[in-house]
Each structure stands twice: as C-alpha cells, then as structure tokens.
Image (cartoon, rainbow, N blue to C red; front, side, top):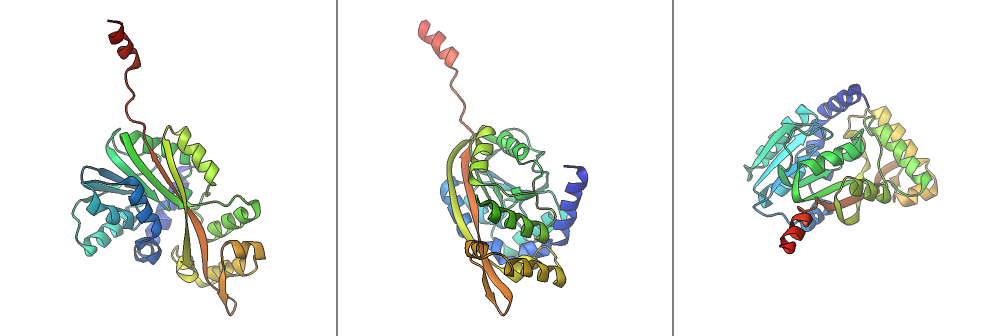
Length: 274
C-alpha cells in the first residue's frame, strides 16, 4: 500500500493515543501472561516490542528482561507510551524508537525476544513485517505475536471485517489460524505453538477508543444488533434496551523462534575424513 496509507495510520493513532494508553483492554490480560509463560524471559534478554501502542506490553515485560525497545509508527503514540510508563514507575530499562514494522531501523540479530500485540491487522504487508522480525532477532531468538483471529466461517469473517473497517479505517485485515501458520513458517521461523484466547470488550469503550463520534458508534451498534443469530452467538453479544453492552472475540497467540545457527555440516565431514 502507498505511503499515504501509513500517513493515515500515523494520524489515526496520534489522535487516539490517549484512549489507547487508558484502555483497560490493553493493561493486562491472559494473552500477556501466556506470552510470558511461552517466551520464558530472563535478565539476559533484550526485547523489541513492535507497534507498542500505549506501552502496556513493554511495561509488562520490562521487569523480566535486561532491556526493552518499544517501537511504533506514530511518534505521538510513543510519547504517550513514554509518559504512561514513566508515570507507572518501577522500570528504567525501556527506550522508545519510531519505527515502521515493515522496515525496522535495527541491525540484524539485535534482539533475543520480540513481541507484537494487537497490531498486525494494521500492517499493509504482514509477510514483509515477519521477514523483518526474523532479521532483527538473534539466532535462537523467540517471538510472541498476538492479534485478532479471523474466524474460518466466511459469513462471520465478513462481519468481522465490516465492523473493524467501520470502527477503524486503518484496519487492513485479520488472518485465520492456517494463514498465520503458513506466513510464520514461510518467514523461516520455527512455529512452536499457537494458542487461542478469548477477550470480552466493553462495547462503548471499544468503539470510542478509535475516536468515533456518537453517530458512528450508533451505526456500529446497529450493525451488531441487526446481525444474524449465528453471528451474535459466535461473538456472545450481550445487549440491553437496544444497546450492545459487550461482545467477545478471539485472539491468536503465535509462539515461534528463529532457528539456532546450523552446524557447518561440510566442515564436520571434512574433519571426520581426516
């Protein structure tokens, strides 16, 4: 996609930076705890948090590792994340860097851990981003990526795409479990585990987080209210007096690693021959 699209992403997240920092949906969650369990971070690890948003993932992992670099495409979002982490206190090992996930400004093998949470559906070229993740990870480095899971059912998937675009025009697309697995393996990662976790959203907070006005929120509400029973059941939509109170979607957690350095097979054979 064009540079204009990424400019729109910067504008969108600069406007809504405060909302993302204050969003209770990002502060904690089973997805973060599970990512930590899989990654097994240590004080020797150097972590890159790609598309860090409000800084919640960076703050969560900071006490567990040597250092964290929190990167984001939107400078205003980085400033808010820095303010948030500073106000929370307790960590002094997080630095901030403006960065495009598809063109990371870091040398090869600079990090031992990489996280990216609820952001890939905004990337115009996810395979390119994954190639960058692979490049900046050291051999044997581990990666945890979390994002909204696209349902396999075409009708439900189309509904999800519709509400995501209505809520945020910078949404590109979400991916199914199979699509994720294929892309991660094509990027030369070793795919260790894929887990699915559910996440319940307070509808009003979720809808307004991106800066929607009252009319737009009502249109989004109507979309959910008028959805088929199958769709409402899938998203566990709860309503009261014609208003959506909350709904539940699914997040995918991908745990993978860059292969460790391969042995020099040819050299070993030559040594055996001697």
